[in-house]
Image 1 (tube, rainbow, N blue to C red):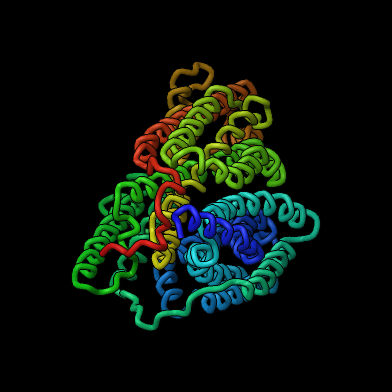
Image 2 (image 1 turned 30 degrees about the horizontal axis):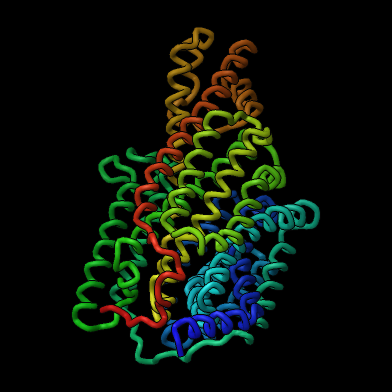
Length: 548
């Protein structure tokens, strides 16, 4: 048979593959994303029901992310050892249990435990999605299936804010997790349409590597997440401890980096000794794969930073509701959803390198544009245009770099690719959120300090009554209330302070967006190292032998 005939036969086989199994995988991605997106929406209801501070409820959000990031590599190995289908069904059932615990939870402790179960389940679902796509789809269908995961994340985010926000406002927060339970049941039913190879009992789990990477990720996540609360350098009063006055946040970050390096050293030694590593470094074996991981980390960090910044200004500064936030973010979320779905159509026309570089150019232009046109109102046409352009670039990039990693590795390493993806995305999300928060607060503090010094309407006697070391983002109404009750400021002086705060906030936002644009511009460099060939110009990696 000629090569042309072989290609035609393969193409026909791809066309005949049913999309029904993908429905279950698509819903599994929505299940995870909807659950984690519903937690912030349900925050107020939980605080009211349980009579606890918001920080107690936010522990559940942190718990979920920590467990996913720390266990995802172990989850990939469990899937390879036991079998992807069996593990997938087990953890989806566990996710259903966690949703039921959320619905029935009598205390906030139940919520935290439930999210720990959900995180442990997601740690296996994340690599399972990649492995099951690789085993059920090939070629163009595989690229489309991978793109659907990116669009599912965006769709779940929109749905969680709109549906979850509406339910939480008019019914209560518990029915929101009834949707999570229904999704888990649907995914379990659809899992019987999936096919997968049996597990390999010879696969061993490297416990030393698991401890190194798990502890390292926990240290990094805790360090970045607490930069604001514990201090960027000097320890604040909220820090649990200090080392000669130094905040534990940067110490944990350094410790996490050291443990991460130790993981790579240990893994290389284990591989050279002929033993099975926790994750095969072959998935990062070339500059192209490493460039894809760097690009994924940067674009997810930028997405997390923007997702933190917009709610910060709408809910905290403007004092509006989560539903208002969802409306403001609708142009971005819908654009990401559509772009992630349609970008696969460009794979046959343009190489990943071109799409990646154009994607980062779009995100850079969008962020720079937003830094110029943004005001305290997020619903102006120029702002919506900026969010739309950023959504196009972000949606294309997340799908693209994920597809590069999958297509560059043979099918038997799909689980390892999934674990790398899960680790990168969860860590990038924590870093993007934490760094953007610390950056904006630092800029705000500097702006307020400079403005107070130069403002003749705010005398030193009044300034001495305000703690400028703990400047943070507050609404104008809240600032007026604080100044009128805790200081002896006159009405004119309060008006002057509010004007200073308003200008300082907007300046911090603009400079923060400009710095994000600079980071996006720097990301064009790793994007320039993405593959320059189109998928149909290289042989199917499933037919290639795995390099040692």
